[in-house]
Amino acid sequence: MVRQALGKGLDALIKQTQEVSELTTPQAAQMVAATPGTGMTVTRIAVNKIVPNRFQPRRVFDEEKLQELAQSIKEHGLTQPIVVVYDAGLDKYEIVVGERRFRATQLAGLNEIDAIVHKHLGDQEMCALALIENIQREDLNPIETALGYRNLMSKFYITQTDLAGYCGKSKAAISNALRLLELEPAIQDALQSGAISEGHGRALLMVTDPAKREQLFKKMNSSKMSVRQAEDAARALTFPTKKAEKGAKPAEVASFESELQSALGTKVEVKYGRNMKKGTLVIHYHSLDELDNIASRLKNKML
Image (cartoon, rainbow, N blue to C red; front, side):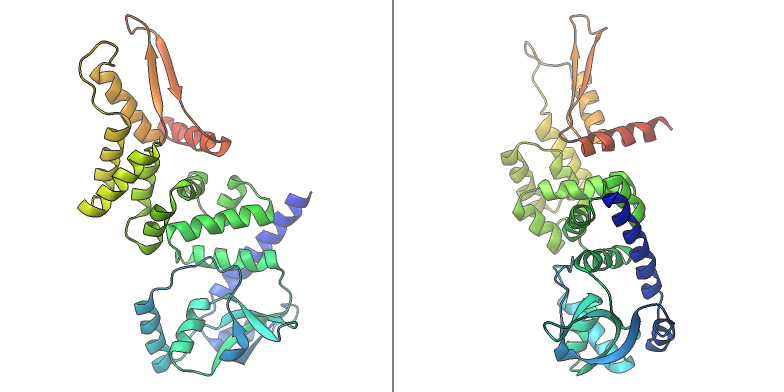
C-alpha cells in the first residue's frame, strides 16, 4: 500500500513537471500559477535569497554553455522561470527546477529572477521533480541519470519496471543505466566528463575482470576507440582466441559464445559432449534485474 501511494504521488508530480516545462514565458507562468488550487505563485526573488537543490541530479555544469545562456539572458531576459520552494527555517528559497538558469542569471550579474514559488513540497517530491525534469530534457550525463534513477527507486520504493513507465524509458534502458554504477570511479568520472560515451561504458561492463577492464579503459582513452571497436576489444579480452590445443573450444563455438554475449550483454558458455550434438547453454546473470533485462532482449529477438 505504501508503494502504491507513493507511486500515485509520483504520477501527479510527473504531470506537474510537464505542465511547468511547457511554460515559455513568465507571463504564461503567471497565468497558470494564479489559477486557484495550484498552490503556486510567481514572483521576482532576490538571487541572494536562493540556494541550490539538495537533490540536484546534475553534477557537471558546462561553463561555456552557462556563459552562452548568461549572455542570452542579458539580451533577451529569462524566458522561463525557475521553480523554488520556501524554507522558513533558513528564510531562503530552495531550487526545485532550473538550477542552470539560476547559475546563468548569477553570471549575467542580475539581482533578481522570476520564479514559480511552490508552497508544498517534501524531500521526496523535490528529488522526483528535479530528476524527471532533467530526464525529460535529456540534460544529464549517463552517471547523473543512473544516480537519479537509483535515488528515485530508493526514495519512492518503486521497481525498475515502475520507473521505466514514469520516465518513458524501456526497462532495459533503466537497467543498463544502473549497471554503469558498477564501474570503477575513474571510469564513472570519464562518463561524467564526456571523455567516453555510455556505449563505451556498456562495452567495459562486458569485461568482468577488473584488471582487464582497466586495461581496456586506458586503451580506449589513448586510441580514441569507437563504441564498435570497444565492443570488439571487450569480446577479445573476455574470449581470447585459443590455440588449437587439447581442451580448447572449436573456433565456431567460441564465435557463437562471443556473438550471443554481445547480444545479451552478459557472459555465455556452451558446454557440449564428445560429439557436440548435445550440450548445455549457460547464460550468466548477477541480479534479478539483470535477468529481466536478458529476458527482454531474448523476447525482442523472437518478435
